[in-house]
Image 1: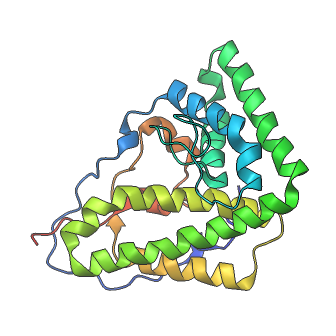
Image 2: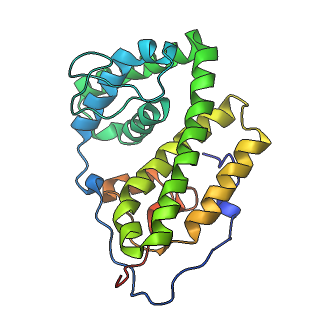
Length: 228
């Protein structure tokens, strides 16, 4: 899949504290990837997707008390939904026949809403892309304050950047990748590179084929471990 904003060509690195040790392996919650759980989450998102796309809320809820209820399910956004769909497609050969049927149903739900509510869908993805990119600034502030805090916060930030990339792919596919969004993405990635260095792949190894390093470089980097 082509990189929509030319991020792989960026080589800007900011300041990295020299008083660091060799980067440790960052532990991610997805080190134990559960294919069935991911399919269940995608199915729940599919059931709520039509209602969600027409609502003003950017971060929706699924399960546990209705659309606006709580529960243990992840927050529903277009990016979070697409993240799961693309991983499930890539690992489809490992699904049971019944699970493949479930995946096909979920994909149809996604595509139907994307087509039927195109204007709403496009507004949501542009809004989500900007929201997630803007939220990265808090992570940069944390990294400037504390290297230790930077390292502990990075797994969540890497997940955020991965979901953002899924949204950027959709933005490009809909012809909505304007200069301002491209510039913002490059700026955020330039800042992010300044706080990380090469590390082991952050997700479970089964997901490596889904995330080539050239396109998802942040999953192969992490902040250095520091003594402060």
